[in-house]
Amino acid sequence: MKVLVFKDIKNNRWTLWSLDRKTHLGYRKNLSLRNCSLIVVESKRKQVIKSKKRSPHAWIIGTITKTSKGNKLVTYNPFKNKFFMKENKRIQKASKVFFNSKGQVFTN
Image (tube, rainbow, N blue to C red; front, side, top):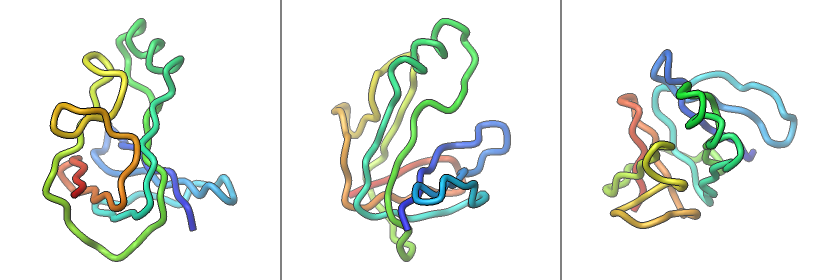
């Protein structure tokens, strides 16, 4: 099942939505996805910058898989970049992504 994942900033956990059924699946502290797309909605990002209030506008879509770990940090800050970044380069796709309980995202 394909899921959409974004960070719940208030509670420092990951929010999961089903893409197929468009339903909320709950929250996770740790999670691994495969065949991922990293997406930022530019119009919503601009609203975040203008209002200086964070709201969901960037997420990662993929298929849930068994836990694996990556070694390269993926970051996103709407005030600094328009995209998810890995090693100071734009990243839009990843074969596997790992979300940890500290609110960090890693890939290989």
